[in-house]
Length: 310
Length: 172
Image 1 (cartoon, rainbow over the protein chains, first blue to last red):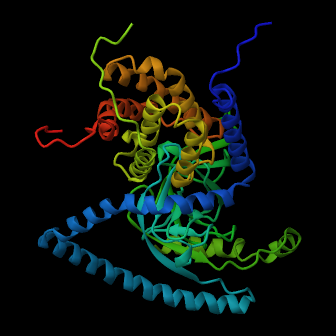
Image 2 (image 1 turned 45 degrees about the vertical axis):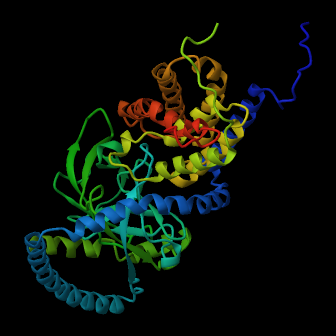
Image 3 (image 1 turned 60 degrees about the horizontal axis):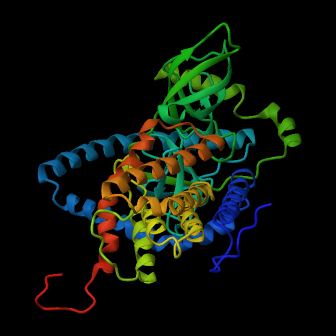
């Protein structure tokens, strides 16, 4: 046995022991956070500590933006203004049509005895920056708990769904984009009402419909809208367009890739829809209700008619 | 054996300066750089610097705490940066005597290896947690960070290079 002389200076535990301690502590935290989500309290406290620094760090960018905005040329502004006016006219027309249709639908729903669909309240927000994490597709928006944003809300832009609020802080929230690998959204093919779940494709910037039978009635160019079955995303929002369908006899599932409709990785202004979702019935009740599910056979026919008319 | 270059005797470091430098590094890390993939990890760089220069003052505890703050601030898995920074600090402290022997660019080369190692550990953690590998551009940021080493060492050592008493006839 080798005996080392006692140390001259007291320096605490050996470096390797310290490394083992801190590494195992980190690993324990990682597992707690990744598997069980137990570390949210600690995270909130740490975020509170980091918040002032973060606010300070974003400041130069926003000031530069403001200065650039101030010096944008008049011609550019006028052009933009004219474009916006055109869009407004178009939008107000479709709003009028929409209102007429909504009134009709509500009346029909009352006749059919179905609960009225919940209305959404939107919170406009600006995307501040991309989250500093090359492994995920997340952005930070400048609206948080104090503005009424809640975790789980859907986030849309002027075209369609962008993502979902996954974490909220006091004055900012983290939005996971649709293209994130861990993000899923229940969708419906607009043409025939076929239901599916779209998963984020990660780096490719596309969405993927998994577990769709190889003979599913879906083709390139089909539009996907939210089905609203999850109670998170309101039904009828544009999600994506089917870009490619690969049917391989070797696999029982088709490989379906879709291009997101909204400017998922581009836009700057978004709307957080805080859904006051009705209580979802328990599975037994849901099974009993399936017979008179409004999203079953009837709307399918109606949608097809609408598609024919368009 | 002595380094062949003349070495300046530095003033003792102030703990407040170390704290300020870490706060500034965190601040720089939270700045939304464009493109994000090329933004070096300033906290890792500063941590490496102090672990090399002051291994008795800055150690694994500080590294771990900084890692937790970075984790919470960037919204990733809690513990990812804590683990990475602990390993980085350990490696930097172990190599500190060797690194100080080299000239500034030789030091930067060592730091490049350390930062690449740290990024590799982070990638392993994320891959284990189920993420996709985001491509080899991931390793551009550590190299850029190492290229900043001479600047960082100049800046962070500046307070220790102050003259003891102010002399009107001397420029610095």
